[in-house]
Amino acid sequence: MIPYHVVLIPQYLLFRDLGWLDSFKPLIVPHFFGGGAFFIFLLRQFFMTIPRDYDDAARIDGAGTFSILWRILVPMSKPALATVAIFTFMGEWNDFFAPLIYLNSQERYTLAIAIRQWQQVAVWGRGGVRTADVECDYVDGDRADDSAGCAVLFHAALLYSGRGDQRHQGLGSRGGAKGVLPILS
View (cartoon, rainbow, N blue to C red):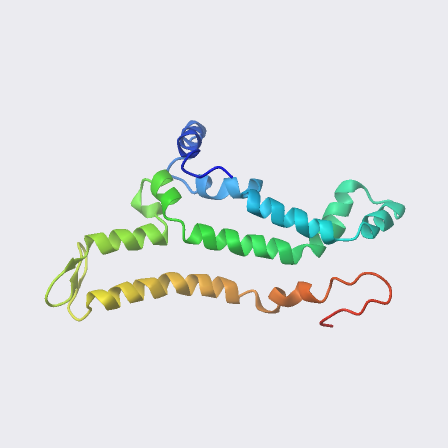
């Protein structure tokens, strides 16, 4: 796999020519085209475990290739797609380098960059933390860093917990042959 820093300059020039600098497009769009070799290989290996009998049965029923993909394979691959989505989300959520390169205005900064910038601007004084805009007399540096970390963690935990029982949906739905009992029915 090619390191990200090797393709950074050509990718930056491409995004500049497309007019995508200072927008979220360079951070979002490349992940819709595979997201990297690990995720492509993960999905390939998952699709290799699905029996070809489903494809054959759908072809006998008159389904085409696209219909087999969207009506049979994609619903069966929800656990693998959820894994890719969670890893991609967490990787981008924690990414510091790409938003720093592609985003120029402070209004578009991600939380990781905004918190780091806040830490750099903060002047640690005797009475607490003083920033360019806000004075807090009773907050020391460690508590300010902890509260900023909790703010970042809270949003990620909220998005993860919002999935509910869908996280465990794919565990018992792998049996499709006659006589095979689902694991968690």
